[in-house]
Image 1: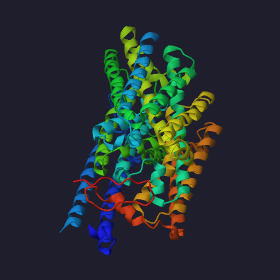
Image 2: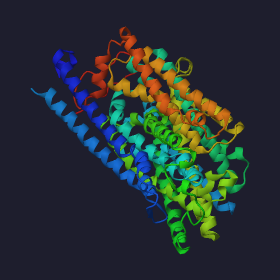
Image 3: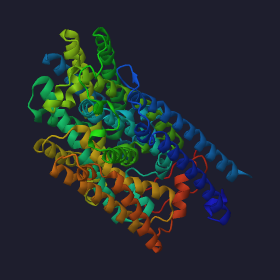
Image 4: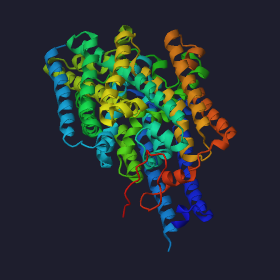
Length: 97
Length: 515
């Protein structure tokens, strides 16, 4: 940990690798969200789902109104687990005796 | 509508809010208590409080009204308001908590070491806060007018007075209690009547919106009647504003400081995703049922009250009145909770201004700030014409996405951000999105391309702000703050490690070392 406090080159490398891995994780999450959720308007244009009536409303209502939320939660869950893993790896690295 | 039950419900919510707020007063003694509840709030309390604060009149009443009017494409509002927390979780939650600052202007100053940048951020907090508060006050006026026939200003003034008393008496600690209570109240107040409404709808033979004459354009998530390109622009600009704007709302960000550490901040945000996901199933259901039973409200323009109208239309009798009163109580909780949160963050920013700090001291400054922060939007709400509450809140999201989103993301992840870059980017996005929104309000709506570019500016104003921030920063690399390495250590390293995260600006309050 001394390396980081004293801003030595090795400390800088440790810190930069933590930031990189966390940023990569955040970018992966945003790409997944952009594809899964941000892709929906395009999907609705390309595929005519309006004809599929499920209960009182067409299928897109169920996708947007209900199915999206558990998907968002699961992505969040995976992100939290992965970012805590990155931090543990960093802690183990700098705490090595 | 029988006014007695609803009047009792409104009075009960008002008294309960005040009661819980004053109870919190006994705990809040030090300045740190007052601002961020001494950072001792657990993830479940915190996430309930975030949910309670975030679910405003726009979520509770506005979405169902917009769905009733425009149909499936409006379901993007709640989706975006939830997904915004996922983006916030991924890019901002833990580092923002680790920054140790109280407010967005604090973060700005901590990161780029410039009082000028802090000033710009403070002004933006106030503008976004006012854009958010105005529709809450208008909505409160409309609800009280509808359910008990009071003049429109009564509801607006009532909400403003309760909020000021609350903020002035207890500060953040009491607000945390109040907000957590409000989430569960709002959830119950929508859920219980919905069960009865669905039962009545089944008894009625389950008529669909099409049976009630809903058009194909209403049922389709891609509104073909305005042209495909325009409809796609409108949808994606809405996605931009809501996904990216959430992290820039001043009253949302201030909640992250009450988490004990960065890890708790992430877990809190994950819980928020769950709480919002459960809540947002319901406004859509109200909108669809509303299209079947209350389609005539579209012609009157008072679609924001569709949620409150349904029990009397579908059930009637004493049960209908009681359910209507429960919904009214929830709506009032929505006005109070969001207005309290926004007012608290405005007061926090105004209290840290140079005048308040020198003349009044922090706690008195906060109290004066609360009163000042609320008077302007209250005045605007009383004099200006009505806009659908969810649309008006959408403007606040567009400005937040175009200013604080690039500032936070670049500030946390890009060491080369400089003060001139931050200022130029915030001004470009603020004037771009803010100017467009003002122009849209002045012009009125005509459904054309210009109208959409102005009323939904985020798709162009956010990239503009981001590009400005990057380019001006690159051109002013000599102005890079000297302590940026230390700042990055502070933002990204786990609190568990006993690293030196001290900062020279006098704002930071390093955490005690943890085991």
